[in-house]
Length: 169
Image (cartoon, rainbow, N blue to C red; front, side, top):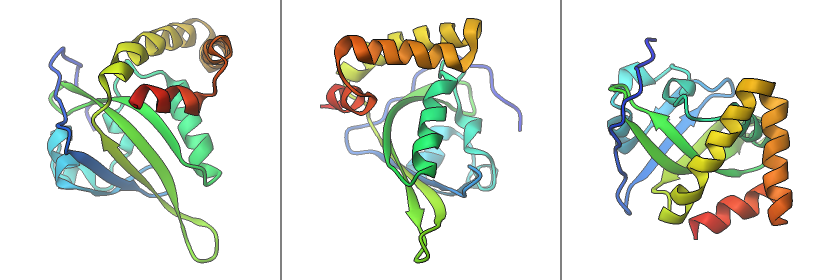
């Protein structure tokens, strides 16, 4: 699928909007609610079966998605700020909660994500951190980006979860 060129046009979620989607264990979209479809700019037919990464904005550091995948594959939930890329090149920020759906036999059936409007506080902080992580990735790969993220967290004396949850309050 063709990747759009990013623009400076921002779409905003309202306080009452919740984006919901599900992916299979390989990250292919198997469900999206109306708000997900509308915000993405893709039709439902274009989204279903497509990799969720079609919404990945180039401003997003890969390390954030590595953390996300590492966590959900261990059946742990994760919260993250994500900048998504819509079909028309516009972008929209979300505060995401991603979890694994577990079968009765204890295996992962799929992944479920609920996203809502990010806080102003989060959007005042996260883009700057992400820009630093992305710069580190470009020069030293994901190891450099992870080291930088760990340094930021250690300097503040908090965990990743404490950081993102404190910014959303």
